[in-house]
Length: 394
Image (cartoon, rainbow, N blue to C red; front, side, top):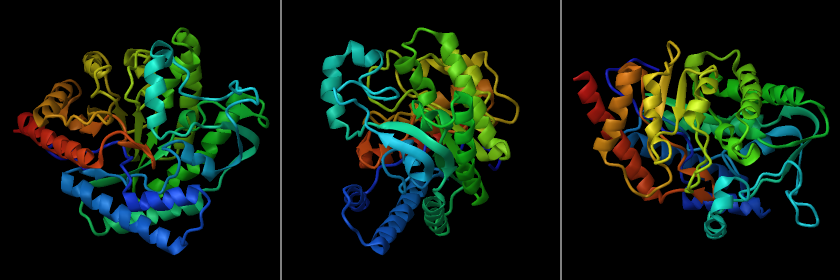
């Protein structure tokens, strides 16, 4: 990442899919035959357009919008791994199967059942089944990844930007819960998973992009699995998964790695979120050159003051979320500038970029804001970074 006398802007990666691309994705998911060449052309054109729009909005370090991924930002990986079978989340009697993960878990769901009964049916979410490991884990997504890379490279050849990244899923978020019928131990399973994911990580960097490792489930699992009560057990769970992630990243230069956490993209109360102070030391153990951390929403914005005491490791950068992905209210550029400057004065203006809390779409069918508002938010981010840069650098 080049050193510049200004604050650069970026975002978390996933962007709202255009209607024509969604038509193809929906048909494919329903088993309807589509013309493969026509779909590829549609995907190529959609990536070219989203790259162009990011540059026009003033975003410096951009993504492909994750347009080539089906299902979700994390569950796409099931189509790229061997050794798994997806089984129903419920037993024949309707009870949850061991290893299932649904929105019925967690503090918010218990405290606000009436809200959840209204909210989730409208979100376009499809619940995960139970990822069941039935054999050796191997990466098989080379073709899909190569297509994603090719479309992105072609789009970038026609657009001038400072940098580019592609998001991937972390081991903890790829399989936050699972059933294991092959490896016999949690460590063996996670390290095998990390070895498979490494192939995706390395291919992205070899193509000339930064790799962003998305790990929303690392904080989120605290509430839904540990009931927000046993911090020591949760930290042991998280530390093993960070060890697995660092294993997958071991031979990639830190400056080519971004690590993203958030507390789930849902526009929900978030009363059960684990405080950043309880996990920030774990986050900073990840071998990454930059950390993308949610700081633009009402439950976590106050945590900027944590950086008065916590120090970034030398040579690493902070990418705070200064734009929310989960509300259609467009942040004022002066607020964006305020969020950036107060953090820049703590970690150093050369060590900060402007970012978003999370992706604006968690999958093809799940969007958090209207697409026209998404672009307005990214423009506000760029303008706020310009204001902050003038204040910090003159």
